[in-house]
Length: 276
DNA sequence: CTCCAGGGGTTCC
DNA sequence: GGAACCCATGGA
Image (cartoon, rainbow, N blue to C red; front, side, top):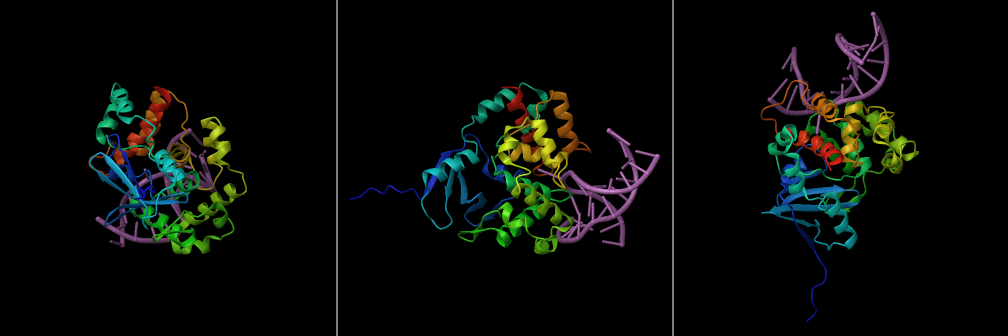
């Protein structure tokens, strides 16, 4: 008998993660609900994710085994290297942080690829989550490389850079189409470079991102947080004020699904940088 | 029909 | 700096 050595799925303990809340709270727009779980892509990788109790299970749409490289990729994507329960316990010493933690304790900040995070949050401007996700999906299927199982990768900057806004008409992204192309061009030409952004001081990276048409303070903050693992250093009161200005200009909403998660993500990242 | 959704650009002052 | 207005699109 030959032992089965390939792994057609990977499982790990979520460490208190709520998969559904994490995927659909508004930090990522690359996941879809399917009959047997949540199908999503990141970079050149695609998976179907499920949660059974505390266990997170990932499998390929076609059932293919995972390589070591893919396992590491998803491990990093879901930030499984961080001890969230311990992190949250520390946050709860602060009143504002505690409120964010208690709103939805199962949310983790995902580590998403830079370019797709940038474009997704450009699309997000003056828009709502279901439509953002629909536009992202059309962007992938229309301009991305097929990954099998009906999934498509997020298009590369080089694929979008030569296009004209009318070429993106099928996205139904409206006036944002020219923003997407400008972002793709600046990344493809190296005027905006992920490695350089990561090496920069966060405030400088923020300014650099804002040179892209359609990227202002809010989009830049989201890209720094979700796509670059970076955040600016600022005193707590400044940071909280910015988060609240961005997120809840009219005051904290009561039952708006996802919003509490966004607040938590904002605060979590700040706290990770400053309370360590 | 009007309003607005996780903004940003432009054009004023 | 801040305020008004516009930008496409689709759902309530």
